[in-house]
Every structure is written in C-alpha cells, then in structure tokens.
Length: 346
Image 1 (cartoon, rainbow, N blue to C red):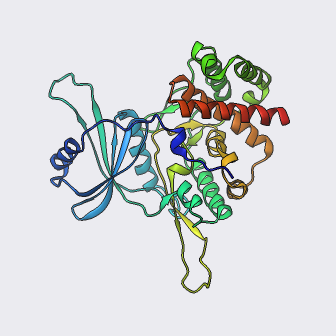
Image 2 (cartoon, rainbow, N blue to C red):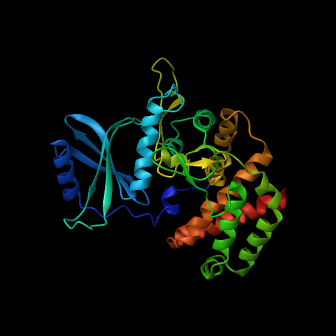
C-alpha cells in the first residue's frame, strides 16, 4: 500500500490569517476568559480550529470566515442534538456557544467571522488511526458506513441543492437544472471547457474526460436524491479511538467512532456524493476499510459505487477550477486517470 497523506491533497488550503492575539482578545470579550493551553488544530478552506481550556473546561474553538457555512453547520449540530439519534452511531461535538464578529471598526468592514465553542471529542483522525494500526480497518469501515447511513436517513428536503441556516433548500446545484446528476454533469463540462483545464490535464486526458461524461449520460440521469449529505465525508473529518482491553494478552485493534466533524459543506442530494467522496482515495487505503464500509452501509453494488465515483468528479473539478497548488493538481490528474481506467474496465 502506497503511503498517503490527505495533507498533500489539501496543500493549498490555507487557514484564515487571524493573529492568535486578536482571536484571544475576541474570546475574552465574548466569554470573559482568554483561555489557556491553546493548540492549533487542522484548518480548511475558510476555517481554523483550536483546542484550549476555557473556564477550566477542555473545548474546541472553531473559527470560520464563511458565515453561511458557519450558520448552517451550527444549525445542523443543534438539530441533531434534539433528534433521537444514537450518539454511538453518529457521534457529534456539542455546541456550547456561538457568536459572530466583524474585523475592523468601519461600518462597512467586510471581514465577518463566526466563532463556536464545541465540546472536545476524544480520538484521532481516521487516517492517523488507520496508519498507526490501532484500529482494525474492517471494523472501522463498518462503523463509518453505519454512521453515514444514519446521517443520510436523518433529514430529507424537497429536492437537491444548497441549504441554509434554517435547514431549508435555497438553490439547485447549477442554475436552471434541478436534477442533481445532470447539474453535476453540466458543471463538470463547464470547468473542463476552461483553458486552465487543458493546461493542467493535457489535451488527451481532457478529451478522454469529455468522452466519459458524454457516454455516461444515462448514469447521470439516474442519480437522484434529496436527503442530507455531509459534503466532505472522508477520514480526515472523523475521529476514532482505539479500545484497549487489559484482560486480553495481545493488544486489541477494536475501536469506536467518536465524532463526525466539519459540516460546513452539508447539502441536500444523493447519498452517492458522500459515498464517492469516501471512495476517492481507496487506491491508497486498505481494501478491508471499504469492505467494512459497504457492509456497515447496508450493502453497496458495484454499479452504485461506479455512480458515486462519477458524481465525486464534480468535487475534483472544483479543485481544478480553483487552481490549487501543484501537488493537488497532480492528484486531480491521478483521480481522473483512475476513474477513466475504472470505467474502461467496466
């Protein structure tokens, strides 16, 4: 199995540039406590996370520069808390408090930020838990698949598209196209038609991708759904914890899922979007992880997995459109090549 790091794919995802001293002052104004033992955790497109002690309690401070995504994420976490969902199946951080603030003293200052205090969940990212061998891949996959199935069954909308802080559908994925599969296909065609696409992918690979999208029209037509989707469902956005048993003579590889994190891209649509996201890097990870995942999800056919991979190409095109760093673009081409090979073989 080749070594792999999700950081190599997200190498261009810089954290928001907000000085720690400024952030600590903002927390003091909000909570009356500057906090102690600050530790920077992972960041994303427009967010950053810190572990700290506040009022003597361990917590996570989540900072976001995308207020729409921030409000939606907080609303979802609070929604789930009020539902009869088994936390052992879909574990989530608790929202202690949230607020919004604006940088600068001018009335028209446009740097708006969201801050949330969340419970600190135990465990480590799924990728690290897998790489360090503390968790059995098959069991881990079953836990993750079961959790995703619960997520997909938790909330339904009137169609597919973007959702707001009131957990209402606001717009389709692509203007004038309400059908998710066709909307994703049109978006991909738009991205691949840009000059930048040929510069990155090369003429031959680009032409092969266009042929693939043309030939899979019926498959896109069959992609439908209007349930809740996480939008970024992969090992880096979940925490797992190994379970040790002092009675056993050998170290145990049993584990538990302790949190599903980062709901900023949550949306409404086909569950295949999340499934495709999870399978995106399967060529770098143990096969047992995906055997267990399919079992935990209740069974997945080869046709469903192929459709999920096809749908996930929209996310890869989004990376391509935003012209991320060279390592990310190299991986975009790798995923394009892998997908082309899979559909050629099938």
